[in-house]
Image 1 (tube, rainbow, N blue to C red):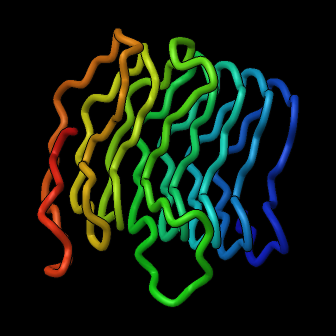
Image 2 (image 1 turned 180 degrees about the vertical axis):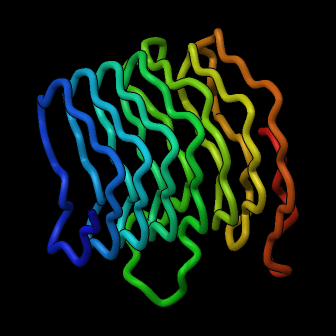
Length: 201
């Protein structure tokens, strides 16, 4: 199944339970392709999300969300917003060309492939985030504890913004984070910007 050109976000639900989204292609939406808040036991598998005018995926305040084997490409702001979730995982996904399309509508100007935040940082537990390619700014930005970031290939970041990293956090004292077996390649910063970018920061 292929869904395209939705006026807002096509899949937007609050409080849903025991739902599986499998083998669907979403393209050219004016907002997020999928927005789920307060859900329990959600599975997203084998899907393709392309050309969102804002964030590709937004998952917030959910429990036991599993997202795997999917592609999120050409999102205009962030590829994936993972906020205040616990348990679950995000594995074997590919996030490509986040914020890289010129001359289109801008939102918050973040340009992060995977943005992990939480109102209770010690309760957030996304696990095994994988593969990010060509990001305008950050590959993974996490501000949480109990977070595992492993087995990633992050290839291309800080393509147009400086002061970032392939894997990035700031003022993170929540503890029990595990970062292992990641490959970070190909930083590129415009010549007029100062040289402040790192593989891990």
